[in-house]
Image (cartoon, rainbow, N blue to C red; front, side, top):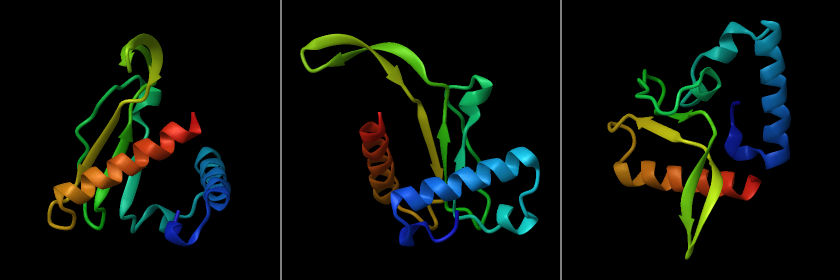
Length: 116
C-alpha cells in the first residue's frame, strides 16, 4: 500500500483487502510489487514462528509475523493462557537507527494489541 501516512485505518483496511484479492486472483500489477520501503511477511501461515528476514533496497525494513499460538504468560500478578503473535523485525542500519526500529516495533505492538 503506497502513501499509508496519508490514510486512515479504514482506508488502509480497504486497500489491504484489494491487494489480498489481487494477489489471490493473481491479477496484481507487477509495478505494485516493486519499490516498497516496508514489507510485511506472513511466514506464520506456513507454520513458522520467527525468521531472519533479508532486507533488499529499496526496502528499509521487513516486519515478519509468525504463527499465532497459545502460551502461558504472566499478566501482572496472574498467570494466564493467551494468544501470542511472534514478530520479527529486520531493518537496514544505513537508513534506520536501532532506536527508530524499536519505536516502530513498539508502535506496531501497541496497535496490534488494541485490535485484539
